[in-house]
Image (tube, rainbow, N blue to C red):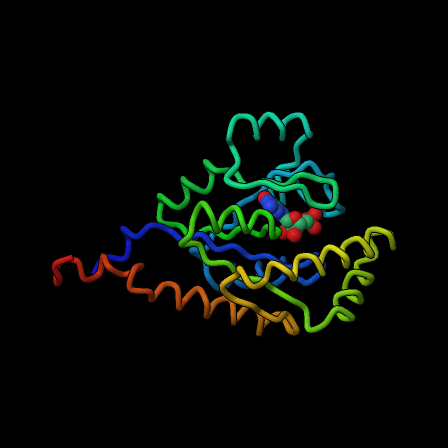
Length: 205
Ligand code: 5GP
């Protein structure tokens, strides 16, 4: 049985701003060490506590547009006036090395990944309700009311894309949401297509 030669899988996690995606993702990563988080590029300014090259690669619009021109993004999108993109080279290198790569991206990016990598797993995380989402966004206290209303409106638009995702996870309590994501990843590991290497000497393909 050879599990080492397998290519890594791409896992997209999307969900409205404020749903607690980052917390769920860090819990998942604690429990699944083989999962690598792809650090995106963005033109938005760092929030308090965010570090360059850890949370994002923070770049100027000029740099971002140069990267688009050079075809350096696997996907990119404009979200609430800022650009966000995933490095094609970073993801390809990790996948080749057999790492599973997690992309925390919004729905336009998710649709691009779906087209380019049909085998990717797309997970959408929602809050228990819109009321709860509003409470969570207000609780952050880092954004103006106008920005919060924009994010709520954007969340309603993003919900329209849920049917093109593979899995829906409700983040009521983080441990349960993380467990659901881990179960999805485990199920994907067990797919025949992911395990053909294990039986290649026993069957004629
Ligand atoms: P935030 O500014 O709150 O960190 O992120 C805003 C939105 O951008 C989130 O929905 C996040 O998932 C998304 N995002 C982060 N990185 C990328 C990326 O590389 N590509 C795309 N398409 N969306 C991203």
